Length: 309
Ligand SMILES: Cc1cc2nc3c(=O)[nH]c(=O)nc-3n(C[C@H](O)[C@H](O)[C@H](O)COP(=O)(O)OP(=O)(O)OC[C@H]3O[C@@H](n4cnc5c(N)ncnc54)[C@H](O)[C@@H]3O)c2cc1C
Image (cartoon, rainbow, N blue to C red; front, side, top):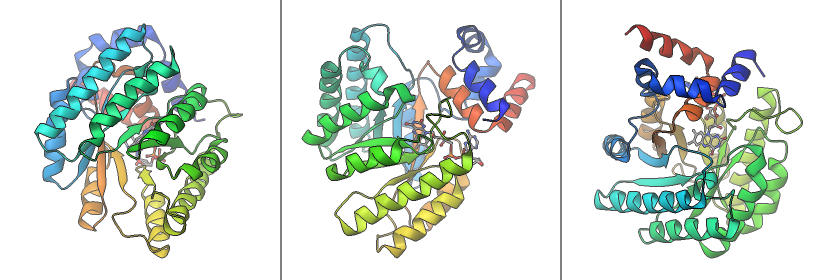
């Protein structure tokens, strides 16, 4: 793993740095590049602007592990309100959930019940709810969560990370469920026994797993994958494979993060592909923001520019 990436991912778990960053105006200014604001109204406003460009959105509240199960009920109620807000504004917006925020650390059954309530509410408007994938220690409980939810709901999708050595095998186990999968490379610091240390292997796995999902959608009634990346080479390759397999242009949606490659989002939309942007909001932005910096350490220049501007 390149040294800058390792340092930034280490920093993402440092409480002292987090406290310092939260108190600095320049840090909050820099974060704005990837996040429209800390409250949900800012995210809904961003979703409205994206909709005017013909681009859908996926809203997600930042935050990871909780101190108590009660906090998870608050998160559930928050998302139920967000779904109502999306409905009132008739926005083309979905939501994406982190299992740790819904209490997966405390009691899987109670976590399932909370996510169930959210999926049921989203289903009233025919919308899918996405489940994020967090660090590798959460893969097994998250797969368990997803399997149980998938038995009861069609409108739930799961994120899989192609940097994990186990993901192809996990996908094989999931395919009989005809799962909706959002494929991403993976954002956490993981040891080489668990995740490919070389980017080329992660990229190759992305193409292989993406192709499996496309073939499954084209020939075995599966659900086309969501291509969750800013990597234009991978997007183009999978779009070509989807076309060759006979899938319509809009079948494989492309999802990107807010503030990254906006011009490409517009271009893909103009070319007839379905595009969504993941819009994050919330006060707990530090760890998430450090992961964005780690993905592209050149982004540190934006932080430095925010210090002087
Ligand atoms: C919709 C969506 C949902 C996601 N959900 C999850 C999840 O649930 N779990 C998880 O572990 N990860 C998630 N991620 C993050 C993902 O794992 C990657 O860390 C992130 O997408 C960067 O990798 P990349 O695929 O864009 O490829 P890369 O090879 O890292 O980047 C390709 C190109 O995109 C541009 N780029 C990438 N990142 C940045 C950046 N931060 N700033 C500026 N330019 C950039 C650069 O030009 C780069 O060369 C999600 C990403 C997306 C888009």
